[in-house]
Amino acid sequence: MMEWIANNSGAIIALSTVVISLISLFVAVKALNTQREHNKLSVKPIAHFSKGDYENQIFVKVKNYGLGPLIIEEFNVSKEKCSFKRLVDSFDGLGALITWDTFTDDIEGRVLAPQNEFILIKASFTPDQDDIRKAIRESLANTTLTIKYKCIYDEVQPEVQEKLEWFARS
Image 1 (cartoon, one colour):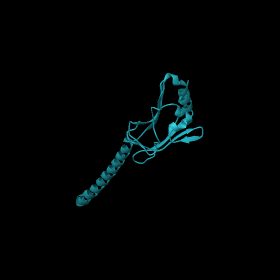
Image 2 (cartoon, rainbow, N blue to C red):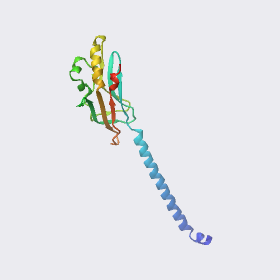
Image 3 (cartoon, rainbow, N blue to C red):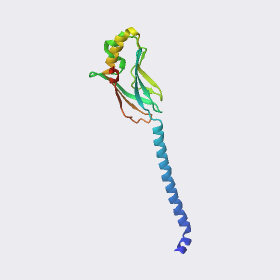
Image 4 (cartoon, one colour):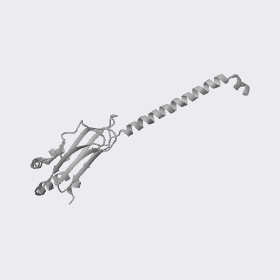
């Protein structure tokens, strides 16, 4: 046996080199795939609806708490079997009774940078506008927001749906 090894040492070394190269190639491919998966997770967007209801102000925002851009594919406001593209449109004639601090137009197709937000609606109220504030709260309480979005790798992310029933509390 030792004589055979001594006579074929060149072939054994060559075969060992091929085996080690194949193992190295496997490890490199595995490391590349792991790095790609890490890169995708490192820039994943995370959509969140933020709500504020104070004595003098009401707001609804969509925020990106992730580390990558949030590409909005579809945004829907639903209320009483009606569908809207902008939250401000869901108030019927009620929205014309106040001057909005700000509101966002149609956000479909827009990109939300990491750690940024779109203010869907924001309104400030004076003490004599309490009836309007209550009516807007009641309207928001019957509203559901839905956002479908993807990441920069064109992968669809889980849909986020938020019922704004929080505005119905006393």
